[in-house]
Length: 213
Image (cartoon, rainbow, N blue to C red; front, side):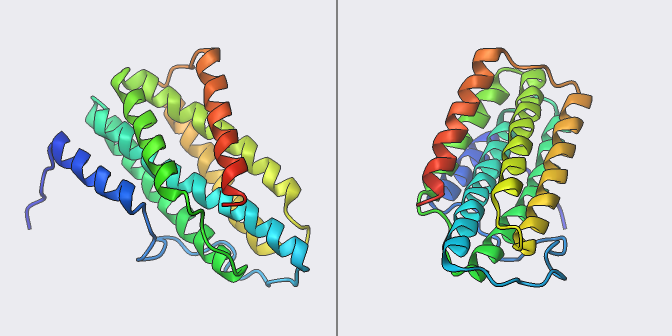
């Protein structure tokens, strides 16, 4: 079977369609859930709601990650850079599935603002790619650095006995750190301070909102 090659216009139209119905891990994750063998410890109502809020933030972050990588891949100039972005996006799809599964276990739903997170992140990703591959990869590295810091904070905030959520977050953290290192090794350039601060601000808006909605 011959592989279909999509034009930039094709990819843009497909992305706009996904913005209206953001990624959903209908087929499940390619890798086993890291929480698969971890016992589900009892949580009181406050702990359950707090854990669910944090995992909803993580799920929203994975929606945004899918969009970022799609936007960056759309405007990447080097086919190897585009392939690297696609590989990272596949692992982010695993994270999305794991977070969604944990949310179901906690009796909660993903963020209702998922289309907003997807559309905004896609726009940012496409803009980063237009600035050249070195900036594009530098954007990946800085994004993943901030995500690792964010996940470290969640490991501190999750209820101590919530081993299932912790196992998922730990694996996500390891994957994100590796994505950042790979981007730097591929030639990613450090972003200016104002850009890094703007990225931090945008992340805070999303995390504070997605916790509740």
